Length: 197
Ligand SMILES: [Zn+2]
Image (tube, rainbow, N blue to C red; front, side, top):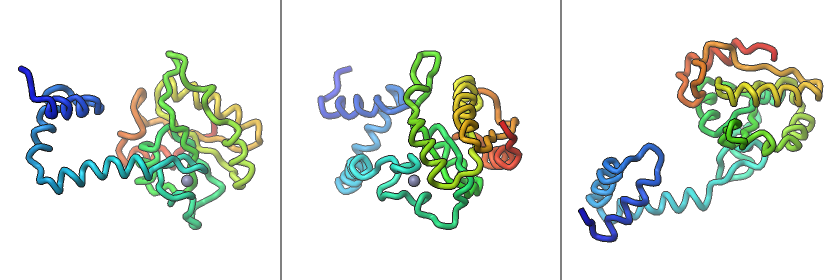
């Protein structure tokens, strides 16, 4: 069925969102059409605002609207402990466990089989961070899948060369799973039970 152009355009945009199929896109479009003018305006403004104001923290890579981000600015955190995570959503999950160290977020969607990944990691800034912030232990919190395993070995060898202790999350995380979706208790136990690489 042919839809009027503005409705089709809205559906086409919504279809670009992850895990949204044609039916969901249509449902969301109908929901948006039922919003008041003010609610629709707020939704549009939030998207533009977030895009305009949010950027990765230059120090740790976490998303922020100020430099340094709230994690880097928090003086109560443990400078000696640096957690390397793949994505911001992993940091959000780790934060819920009460972890109080600092972070280095790779901010990359790794797919090593397809050849994208390792060479894009900013190793220099990781090495500088370790030296300049008095890091004594690097915790590798990469996803328990093949890419995470390869990345962990690679990063461990680099960090070990700097004479810094490297640990990884304890086994118990579902293999092939995703840190982002791991429940709080399992993740907390995996951090507490971390072992030397
Ligand atoms: Zn930061």
